[in-house]
Length: 338
Image (cartoon, rainbow, N blue to C red; front, side):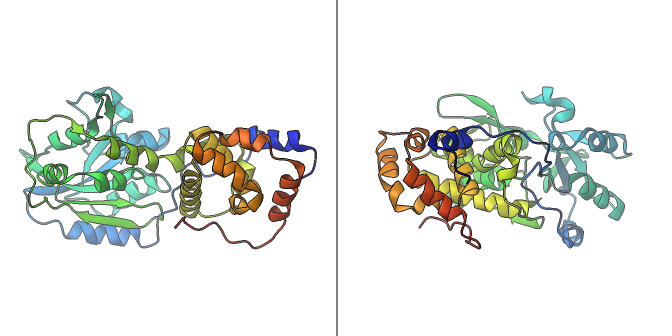
């Protein structure tokens, strides 16, 4: 970090200059070389006619060319949100593409248009009169929080899908299991992740509810799961040169680790977290371990000081120590807080 006075260095942390550098839009690796083979193998284990496999594509994650190409293809598809309160998403909403008779060309097309995008999962759904049963997917899409707020649960985004599946309570898992047998998705590292959806032994869900109800803890977990991607977008727009050179999935992991560290210091607001990440990547992912910063973090944890205000009062001695950390080569990324 170049010298230039405490005020100028503080300004560097708060305001980044836009540049023309192009960065990865999503924290999503290119598809793994074996992905097509693994997906084909998964499809080969779809048995019977009561359940059939469908590709679930989040069309909002595709560019215009890819969307038009899929819609022009001689391939019947269904708007997943048709008949739901979110039907107005229309062409930007998720679509189901049947895979029961899909050949290698169809699979290759799906993989091509979704490469490096969190847009593709495959799901086995019950079929009635030749069409997939969508009621439970509508239920899962229509989230209601503890205070009654209705929100679109975008589980078709594969960055969110594993988090949604992971927070369901036993009754919700049982409700989902009645309408979906298996689910697979392309993970951030480009590999295929799969799960068998099994009902909970003791839970009896209500089948007449049209919305999934998330308690405060579930909703907070979902919001926390989006923080790394949200902050990456902000940094990508405003300070792309600060972002380290690494595979997207590794960047996501490093962001998550740093966000976890920030939370242990009481930094929970998005703007403050963004400044913490900016410093970590501009100086060192270990900058928070500097002993001279301990009083600042103690005050932040007590709630008597916000992180930007603390940074504004760091003196030249602290900034010089931070600059010394930045000059050390070969320092490993930060580790998850214990």
